[in-house]
Length: 518
Image 1 (spheres, rainbow, N blue to C red):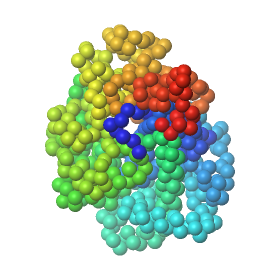
Image 2 (image 1 turned 30 degrees about the vertical axis):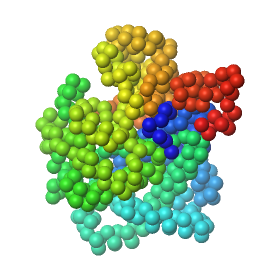
Image 3 (image 1 turned 60 degrees about the vertical axis):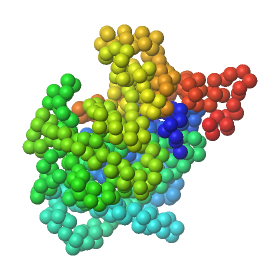
Image 4 (image 1 turned 90 degrees about the horizontal axis):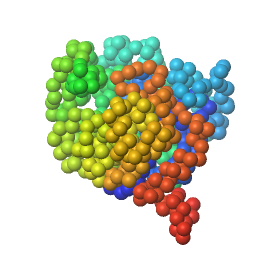
């Protein structure tokens, strides 16, 4: 769907940030409206964050499943149209249109999904019931464990799986069989939610692809300890006899983090995964490519070498580097799935072995323009030093907005950026977007916040912090207006990333139908 070697551009916006009446963005009407907006702006790519269920701190990077989709993204409108759910009544006071209040949204949305499930199982047509059953059978390899995991988590009052009844914690076959019967209704509910997610995700992907827009997903390298993945296959992780991690993931100390970063995820037993031909990873990537046309792998450097921290260490100061699976992993996946449309998140401490792995596999890396103004003209993040085979960003979800960056930058950084980009506080966002698009980078991406010229209060996430300011940002259509799409279209057309007709050159008008297909 998208050629990573061809010039194109796109926008980074997580689904949860979309407008809508039900507290959080989802696969509903606003998602298609945003696709149409991208087309009008000459864009060919829509990049998401992970669409798995959220975890601690509402983060999509600490999910209870590497395979399941977020129940919060299931649009309610199709469920109403199908006759399974009455039109929802909003809770008292409604929802905040510009922030996701997860404490309010999560229980309300789950209640709506439970009502829809009851409606489906009571009144769904024979054709619909058959489609659901067929989908469940096709996805049993991950769905059965995930749905049972969710049912057992509820039955144990939300406790982590290593605190469950021993026979369920240890996955004694007879106990699992009994649990599937005891909790059949709950298992069926979670399976229904995942079916709805998949149907809606596929429909949105088809809608976008038909209009020349590719979807770019995001695959975290690690999984959460409290997850269906680790519970189902504890042998694939570095755990002790009590199912506690012996070592955990993170990054070593540096000037930005004097004690390092201790993420706490359990580490893979790469030797055991290799003995199985990396089947788990192949299944995970296959699932990702079902939902998106291309995806970014977070912390790509961990495949070349990963940082191992003793679980007993409260910081990352006592860790060590160990070799990752390297090319063998991706060769095994590629042998099953063919060419892999992967973007390597190669930020941070990048050593020659990481570069060798990335380039040997032919994966484009990432360049962040905001990073380019701290040194001098030799900085690798300045456009004149970028390679062609990369994805250039003004900033990502972990960065401030461009205007927020400008407001907090040092005097030296602002002076250098202003000189390099011939811009100031009023137009720095457009100058950075234009610099990315005019560069040799094959793909250029900006956050929607930057196309709208929003300040740092609209930032999506601040790494190393937790709180309601993270993962909660939403926009409303009245924030957009007509100018951002018009200017993005001009920049895309002028830089060879969008239909030339958007420039409005005399004698070179392109009909709208052709522009949409370009």
